[in-house]
Length: 149
Image 1 (cartoon, rainbow, N blue to C red):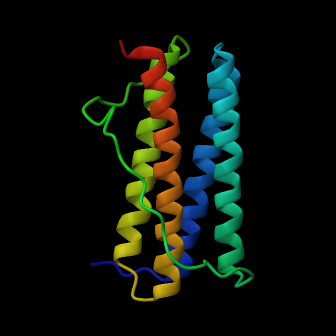
Image 2: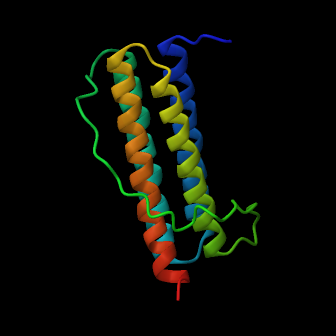
């Protein structure tokens, strides 16, 4: 089994945040729905803030804080699969894809947090997992408003 240092895990997380932020920026330029465009830009900026938190933690500039909040998962889209996006993707596909990206990032942080022996690092990763779950809930709310009967 591979063992990773906290710096390696944080570096992976920083790369993941950069990747998702870039994806959201790209999608925000492609969608025509103003509400979705604004949401994607906000999410992109939030992912960059996550990146900064990770960098600050890595440089020991910032403590992760204590405690996490429980976010209720309504499982609105849990049973749906992530669509493959192309230039013809519609708003429904874009929203569903971003929901699945947030799920993946949430699981990424949770799985790393559970493997941490160092409490301070685990707290940071759990906080970021919580924020990703909050993003998912926000996007699911829009998805539900727009596409549920």
